[in-house]
Image 1 (cartoon, rainbow, N blue to C red):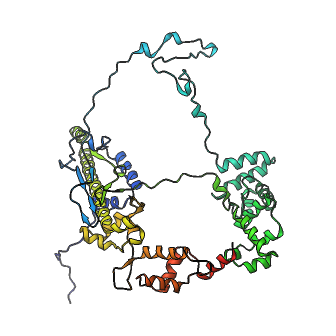
Image 2 (image 1 turned 30 degrees about the horizontal axis):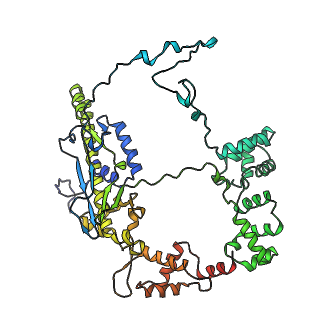
Image 3 (image 1 turned 180 degrees about the vertical axis):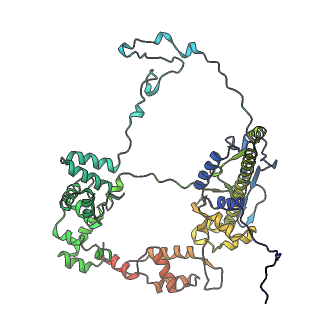
Length: 519
């Protein structure tokens, strides 16, 4: 075979992920918080993008994007049981419009004679400060007629943090400056629960002091409020609190050293180790349960941020459900074509013109991508509500088995698109707020040949059976299988054990020991 250079022409097809397509995919899987952050970055980067604060009823520019296409639209979705209601009971508008018209300049006519009363000026003494009275404003802040007076609400103190609370005690209890430095370093080492890692030698090496001094300082800090602070493990935390209550006797100390046996409900072993009878052991366990295993959480408590649903559903008066997007999670953006026209005329160099056109193209694509994202979310959520109608009517026991393919085939989309839409998206329903992923569950076959059961509903049924069991009749996994089979669920024993462990429910032996121990 001769070796020689030659030219060949080949034709092939390949899928190329353009930057615009990558952006659309990224927007689709964003949560509402991530989307808001992304939109803020685009607003600061692209001068042609503006926020449409007028809302859907604003008069801001006729609903045309940079290409002259009408991107404002309304989505009507209403479900009645298993059938789609085309009557348009629910209406959700997603409007995208051009920049709003100028509202005109505000009136600059001010009655300064009434605003400023020269007769109210008083001698400010050596400070030269005059008390001013604003007769047209009425009373000033804090109920006073002096607008320069500080509002009482501005003097309210904020919530004290754990670091501040401990530092105040440190400044009072420790006199030696070196001990204070060690104490401040140990305070900085605390986690949110109030525990400190057992690294006294490392702290001593870092600060250049003996490890014994760090240990002595730590022992003094362990007497600080709240009781149990600066503990190195759970047993020490509980011991510090019991010592504060003068209840740390040898029997209690032995119980704290064998918390693993207490977790196993090994009553016989605990009674032998602690040297007490069952009645005393029950009282000791009750004292431990009254303690705080995480004393640091009493401070620095962060307010839990509620989940903002992306989709809202509500019951219709004539039956069925109305599904609509939450307008608070939809960023409303417009492309300012007037500003684009103005800066385009002033562009002189080729680089300036390319930059302006790139900004216009990027802004138009972002507006279209947001519109497409909202439409896709609403379409997927509507189909989920239609297929899981039984759940919203009867509860979790009526949850149907559902996979991504079922929704994708119903709305003619790809499974990957449905997966991105349902990630980190929440729906507010009469039964609470759920992530859209919650409604997808594996199926458990029916023992009677009927309709399959959802794995989530089977887990709920297992928990209900265990919660209702009597102390003298604890259900084993085999017994649970018999009960579920009698209810028409074809399930294996290992599946019951897997679901039970996922719910955090101990085995039948542990439950029987727990119920009979009285702890």
